[in-house]
Length: 111
Length: 111
Image (cartoon, rainbow over all chains, first blue to last red; front, side, top):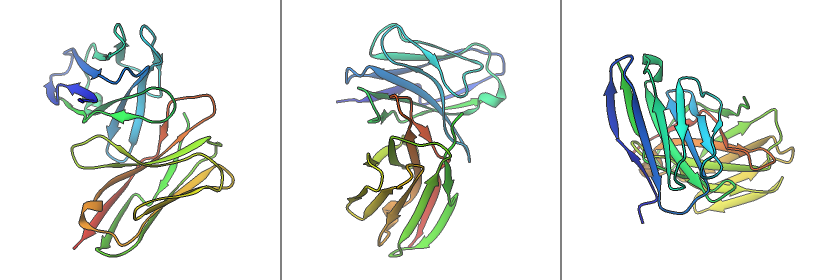
């Protein structure tokens, strides 16, 4: 049982490049979330989805886009990466309520 | 956005000592949760609290949901080296909204 899988685990981007982070869950969860973790800032919500085909903005959505075309996948896109987007990105899912299962993270560096 | 004030930011303790950390908010939460993050991993749920005044234990961990529903604390008794990590409080507002996380308490245990 894989749970929540994030790919890639590490990535270095140049300023202005684009990339997509993939989150896949095999638990048939309705809700999925993208958080970013920065030193001393905790986990901040970027975007989330309450079901296939839906997305909503979180606390820090600027510079990111998301898509949930399939229930099991939640994609986070950076169209034009900036150094301020250097962070560790975590995906989480839940069937509903508060029982989040987190992935192991993607460490992104933008130079 | 909503903010949880978590303290202390970091702690260095001797193995065997007890640890206490807490979270406060200006908002009323329906649910309080405590997560632990090991290095290089995503957060894992430790304890969930559902009712004001509730006191819940999980092994050496004890957590309480404050009477006002605006605070929570986590105690760890007789700390051991594997307790090292970052501890996050999280709260859920009414309405099945995404979790709000504190900034974390980084715990170091000196053997």
